[in-house]
Every structure is written in C-alpha cells, then in structure tokens.
Length: 321
Figure 1 (spheres, rainbow, N blue to C red):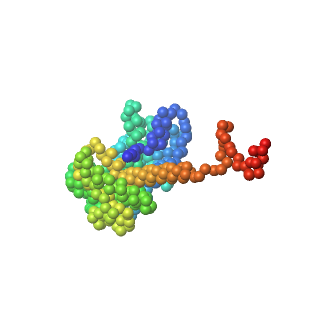
Figure 2: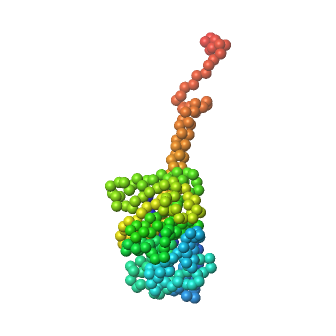
Figure 3: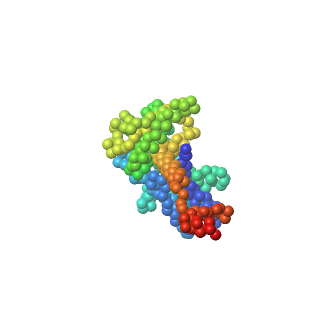
C-alpha cells in the first residue's frame, strides 16, 4: 500500500529552483491541478523577483461544511503558526482562488536545513488549510476537552461538494467517511478493501490501532447529518481514543486524504485485474492456435522425400521400360 505525500512535489521543486536562482530575474506563471480538485497558481514578476505569490483553490464545500471567509475554520491561525513572518496572507485573494500567500524569499532562514523544512511546509499548504479543523479537534482531544461552540457533528470538506464528519467527545473523536463510488466494480473493490481494515486490526501487531468499523449503511453517528450528505455507497468509521502529539501532522494528513487513499488502491486493484484478464485471454488464444490442424502445403526440408501416386497405365509403362 502507498501513502500519499503531504507536500506537492511540483510546488516544492518550483520553490527550490526559485530559491537556488534568486540572482536571476525570471518571471514565473504556473497553473496546475492536483487530486480532489485542488488548484494552484504561482506568480513571480520581473519587478519584484524576491516576492512569490502562491494562490490555492480548494474543493467546493458542501452546505454542511463550515467555511469562514472562503476557508475552513482555524485555517488562518494554522497558516500563521506554520509559516511565521516569511509568509503574508493577502486579503482579498486573487480572483478564482480561496487563498493567496505572498512569500518573501529574502526572509527565509539562512540555515539550509531549516530553509528546506520551511519550503516543504509551504508545499504542504493543502494539508495546513484543509486539515486545520481536524487539527484543532485533535488538540482539544489531547486535553480532554471539546471545541467551544461546536455541538454535534462537524463536517470537513475533502472533495468537491463532499465532506467527512467528526463527532468530537472529551475522550474520543469518531471520524465517519461516507464513501462514494460511481462504478459498481469500484464499489465491490472498495467494500473488500474497507473490510480488510476491520480484519487487519485483529492481528497481534495492530491491537493498539484505532477501532475500525465498516457498514453498507451510514452509522448512527450520522443521524444528525443532512440527507444529502448520506447519499453514499458505504460508511467507514473509526475512533481515535489516544494519539501521540508528534504524529499530529501525519494523522491530520492521513485522515484528510483517506478517500483519495482508498480510491487510489481501488483503481490499482482494478488495473491489476484487467492485466491478469488480458494475460489469461492471450494464453487461451495461444492454446487455440496450437490446436489448429496442420495447413497443406507445408514447407519441406531438402532431405525430405515425396511420393507421387501413379495411375495403373503409368505403372505398367514404367514396369515395361
């Protein structure tokens, strides 16, 4: 199984190339889209080559998700805590984007290791912004408290017009993912994949893992969720009882991209099955070709002998001669 990286590889490579060539006044204007409909835009002008504008467009939030100023709640505080004085939030953002950051390349840490760590964090802006509500909930879980003003379910957007739900309690947080797949084959693969999570926890080495449940119908935790959010093929939920603070970033990222993680392995399994079927068909075709009867007029070797059947008249003529 593969775990998706929290940082954008293209964004990180672009930042590294720009930092290593600050003396060159190069204009940049890059647009690209990554999974779950997250769009990026980088802009560097010739007039101010030390300033880099990074704009991010997030997935369209469903009605049940809580957005403040076009961003999930807690995102502004998370950005300031993660980037410090090197990054400035522009208000309003550029047209068509939820967030625009101004990176001052002259204020990056002089130490190479710290500078690289900050650039990796900037390339992980998706995790910082979309994972901000989940980060706040987990921090309150460590102190056995609940976020003030949050009563009941909390919806967090992770795909366009789709969200997963948190049910925060002082001693645990239940995370529920409504899994949606359009194709019936994808549903079958996802069902098998999710059920394996339930079975895997029963092994000896995973006894301390969060409890996992899978159900074809939404669990009871979603009884207060709107009906539009429950139009899913399956519900997958697990409870976070305890966790280590040093694994906070990893936990936030894995939960935020869980649906993409499952979808990736569903498509990989489907591709593997298609490959196996093609190989099987090819082997059957070869077996049929070998079973065909021999074709007349085969090529004869120089040492091979041939016999001609003579008529009665020709046979008598040959015997007299």
